[in-house]
Length: 147
Ligand code: ADP
Ligand code: MG
Image (tube, rainbow, N blue to C red; front, side):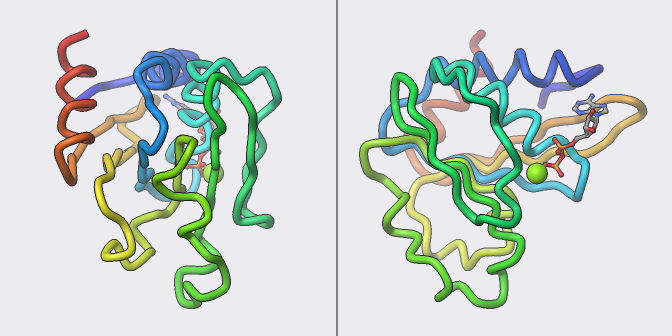
């Protein structure tokens, strides 16, 4: 569990996470519209050394950025009921890091090891809860909690 008081704190937390990421890592961001999914992704991108501006991929489904590792930033809100509209495997468990907004709408059977980050508004801030789904995401979670 982590609590971010404001947007900057959430970005800073995302950056810390981004610094820990390795090729093949998959993060699923769960939370309603405005919960902070794109905001934490901005921080994750910073941690990956990406200097480009992160834009919401809602209408494009996937945006790719180049940093220390490639970042595949997906927003699958619009493909929830038509998973065939994108070949997810092209963006998973390869040379880069994958961040999936609304990933809980996917059939999670399509995923192997992933860290689920649940964002919930709480007062002016955001509460973050984590669920690891596999050994690598468990390791990441422990590293985050050990910071
Ligand atoms: P999502 O991608 O989940 O729809 P965004 O990250 O695009 O959400 O938007 C989050 C919005 O909430 C932004 O407008 C941001 O300024 C606002 N906000 C308010 N408080 C916070 C906070 N503590 N952490 C992150 N964002 C916050
Ligand atoms: Mg978003």
